[in-house]
Length: 326
Image (tube, rainbow, N blue to C red):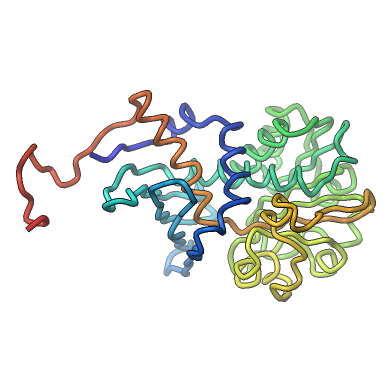
């Protein structure tokens, strides 16, 4: 039987604190299996792109995920798809999960973790957070960061002023008219947009700033200018992917331009920020194991609580033999 977990199911099942800890553990131990995750993306003859992430694997979890997403920037929601959770023993399809929900949660909460680690202890008190791009990923990032450190003020900008104002009202902040104004007012800036031209340059930053760029996850997407990246301590989630289709690729920088991965910092292999006045940038692309980390949490909790619909895709009666088994 396959358990179907919708957006409503997942929001009832997922706990932000448990998700953050699962993601932290994944960044620390996710490389141990030695199977490289793949992110496959293609243009379409429609106003969107198709992306697949395979395989989501983590030590200690006897299952894997395959995710298929449709990304249509002008649609609402802009991302739709499904995550398949398979047994590692026999390939049984354990669950189908709404991809838009899992992706928003894992991207936003992983970004909160990376932001918290890179921003440094010197920014612990009364920090002002800036958000550029008031979408679902930014929602979860704000929620997650508030679980990890105190947040004082919040400033928000979006190309849709009404959406920025609504986001700010939900989170106790206020909206502003430009990305540069967000950077001028905030200590930590998170960008989660579809931009294909830089929104911030080095001249928009100041000593001690931290910036997290979530939007540069496909070829051609760019939120931060090359001069800003070259001046900063750069951290990514995966160097080859960042250089192929992420933040480094958008600025024409090689994989070696990333000073660290988040996993290296969490394991203590790299110190991360070492000075209060350092400019730091985190630019994740998103890794397949992150889908498994949250899908497994949701599936286990759904099994425990009996949430979600069960479907028999083969339609076999108990004890019968399917032609597929012969």
